[in-house]
Length: 102
Image (cartoon, rainbow, N blue to C red):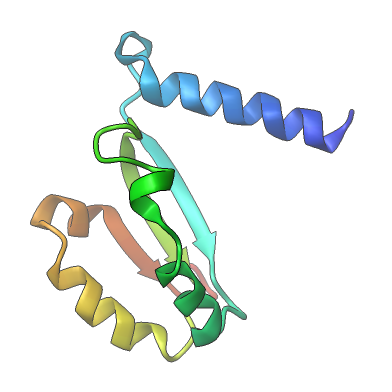
């Protein structure tokens, strides 16, 4: 099985689940392992043109839970700032876990 074709198939299925309300998907759970991510890597995200990549209302992702694992030490500073901009519902969907996933 070609890994690239498999990734494309999974991506298409994922988009269908997220975009089609008749699929009755309650939402997806995404897990990000950010061990080894440097502050320089994180700063690169600030340079992305999110408005062009994902215009408001044009990304119908239904996220039920976001798990961020293995945060570097600097992540706490960033998270304290970012979480203030999120509403209570979104904050309750984000879970930070360590190496032991606890």
